[in-house]
Length: 126
Image 1 (cartoon, rainbow, N blue to C red):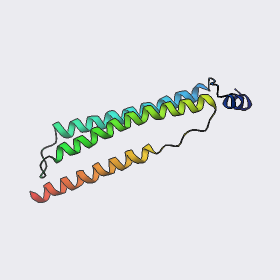
Image 2: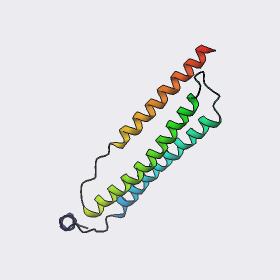
Image 3: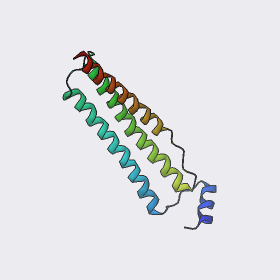
Image 4: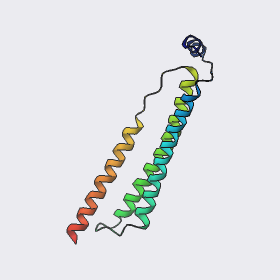
């Protein structure tokens, strides 16, 4: 489809069938978000079930809960992103900016720092 034809559709607000490579790339990105969500969920379950109790009572539950929340956010973000990008490419609009990777990265940094503190605390406590 020519760029002129895409612009006409975007001006009318009508949808058109984009190059299949764009829709498949969008789908692969969505699946990457889902894989990330599943990995976070598996980590949450592993922390709850396999990690020995830390020196701080209840810390294991907090860490597992944070990972589960990040899992939910990753799945929801992936779905929302897929829908917004699909909408944009079918109308020839610019792709929307994404702030969600910042939130996911911040959450993972928080989990990593908390985990490091708990491991060091357990090592010092003996």
